Length: 60
Ligand SMILES: [Zn+2]
Image (tube, rainbow, N blue to C red; front, side, top):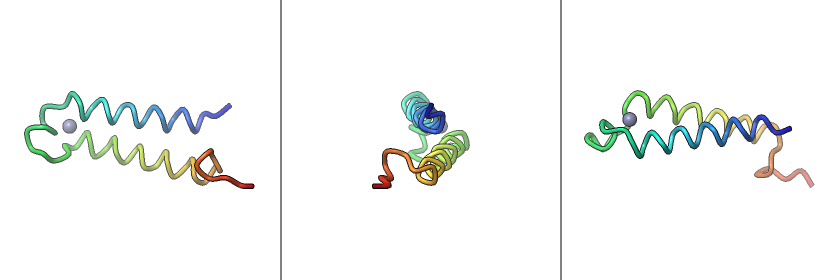
């Protein structure tokens, strides 16, 4: 039951897919508004996982 992990993976995949397909990000060599939003969602999900003590934060 690791819904936090799923959210993190989902956010990362969505962001990576955007970076591969977004013309605006490639044209400007800068993140468009959507990319910034997705990256922010990813960072928030990653922070949540750290707080939840996921695989990246061993408690032993
Ligand atoms: Zn973009």
